[in-house]
Length: 463
Image (cartoon, rainbow, N blue to C red):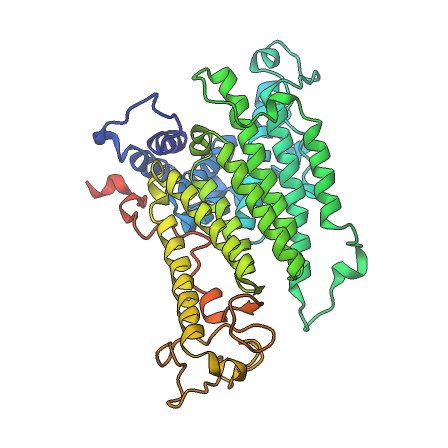
């Protein structure tokens, strides 16, 4: 039931392209399957033994994020982690001794799939890692076909098997796990306790070097896992490689963005963040839409990472050129989201919320330009930056006779100014925190327009 819920949700959201047409009468089929799966999972997790319950909890978590229901996703991710701990699923030596070769491989695929999903959710939703690769005594899936497994082949590794791409993606998530720790250590700065991590571990390798190492591993992949622009053919045996190539690119860009985010803000980093965002958006623009929709709703949350980086640039020191560059990238991100929204039900509205925030900043910029043209004689009296010349409540003091800014109405935002204390369009300025630290839609809330898709436990009991 859980597998049917995920498959039908993905199909409804366009993962199969135009190959299948979904009838309107089947629009809520996924939720029916989801509810039935919920009804078959008992409240007493101690009685839920075996791989079937682990797999069901995992599939319900994946289906929940497909719906855009993040809290439900956390609920079933918690179920999976609880069952995993009770069964010591992280340690192959604790698995049943009578497992067949196929059953052992199936467990390995499930374990590393959910490890990757845990790292992914911890990054995009800023939650704690529940899985750690250094504590995981589970081998990677063998890179052989199911037919080869059935014939007893378990040690031969075929680099052209789709599982080579699967395992490389897992490698990227292992890197991402440690990159996330690195990022959070750099931002922790707690005063109530010493940093044990800094006492015990060196963290001296530059993020550029780490990314170079990752790229070198990427270049070692077989060519078919690097060709992410190949079109969907309809042949599943071939399309699975195109999907792996697209998924590798998506994960690679998430690693790149996470490493970059740990850097301190500077003019050079503004340029680097914009360059990385351009690279990421260009990469996604080259991936065929069919594969992007196959990655589906998780990709929308993924794209929020790009938005987070760009919004952090908006919070720093800008000039006219850098502002226009970031603004253009925001527009490209909204365009990409809008393209995805055409097929993904839960994603509807994500691009609109992003455009709403950028329009708000545009209106502010336009008001400042108008102020420059109408009141140039007052510009030399304005303090350098909004964050170091306030009157205690976050607003700059005004020189206007009525105590308000000459163009903006009472209670509106303070003017942006350059480093000489002058309002000119050519020098550096900093936008006020009131419009750069709030209002951004990430992580995207995909539930507000889709309450009809919320799966309700006990659906069958309502009839």
